[in-house]
Image (cartoon, rainbow over the protein chains, first blue to last red):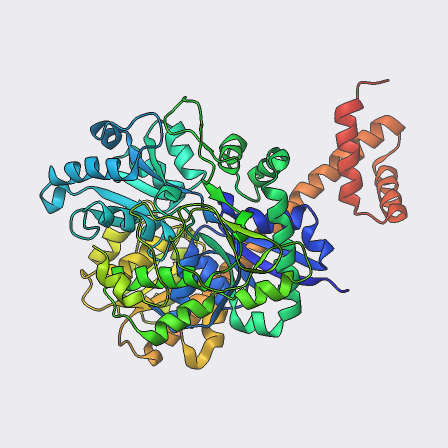
Length: 403
Length: 193
């Protein structure tokens, strides 16, 4: 078997782990695939390299893959997501001053309670000039949608009552320190860096907003997924095996060491290790708190690209871009996620394969066995913090019901 | 046509603006990469924005273009669908361009072609500079290794060089690699007699 080569773009974040491990630990080579990694500093550059063929695939924020397929701000390019690189792994961090004003404790709080305190802080700033400012990593990011979902859910209008701007994660801690931002919603290790520098406190993990929120995906142009189908399936298998290795507690130290290297994250190995092992230090110097679902990379077929997850992202895209629901756009968005490729790649392995391609999101309060065409599949609670559920077949009434 | 140039390399920004001026495009604004980016772009009211691909502020800038009502006309990335090769060439060269809505392709194309050529010229210059630096460093290492051999083996300079070259040929390595090995081992074991 000849080595099929993939150039994969990524940003230095903990959830870029799977392609990095697949390359470094031989999972790719075992599937006859060669991975070359291309590190960038902005999602715009990751996207441009992907669209113009400098890379074959990319570690990408899921909503950006959908926005690209829908042609938001530019001509549409058909996209394919055969594999989800992880769920959640982000946090909401407030500046030291705002944390004090909200009397944040030394643990992760309750989203509704913190939300109520934040609403009072927002009400105390009635003028546009005095509004609280929050930074998210990209307009088309799960960070933006999670933060907005939470704010709207606790009675704060994201575009009127506060200001949400785009902030580059490497500069987020500086912005908190300088008072340019009052809060950030970013991935690790950037929250931890703000905490360690004493400029902020982690208020919430995004997993508290949506327990099973889709985060980064492996994105590629549909053309590549079609033309190099066998190689793409081999790549999916390599990433699947890398994920199994990544979540094994005994391997955490080795993984953190690899990811910390200058050519990958170039960041503190300790902070990376804490993120990998779901331990978060919410205040400077305190003992890390164990929050089991902080990052979700493998169990419960977490890498399976559920079309309903893409549909939820589409619903939030029109919710906040003041767009109108369109059946064909909804179909395009859901069609970006490709469970068919995932299934074909992993048939015959030990991976549990869901029978359905879409599900009710946020409908599970208790772990439950789910229908599978291969292996035994258990799904844990996937609740949204406000208890709402999303039916991908009825996006319009879901949107009409939201605050 | 006002063109704003945003580049983390001030040298490259100067090279590009020189090129544009020579081509008669002299309504230029150089954005200070250390200052508040969005405020500067907002004040400049450009019709074309050239920015280096690897600039860490691109996500921020794209968001500003998408959301801003401060600019009279919306700005979007220049993606020429009828000539995808042109945009691809720009990405390859390491430059991206944003243009205001409605600006004709005939007016934009020469600006981008010029920026691409200047970016490529800059990369070439940088490569040549790196090579020159490397060559200098190699020369210095080879000279050091020669001096070590002359002292240790009591030979003259041509003989020391012949030793280096002979070893390089036998082991199929570069002379500078052999020289580096000698200098390193001398640093570690030079005082062992």
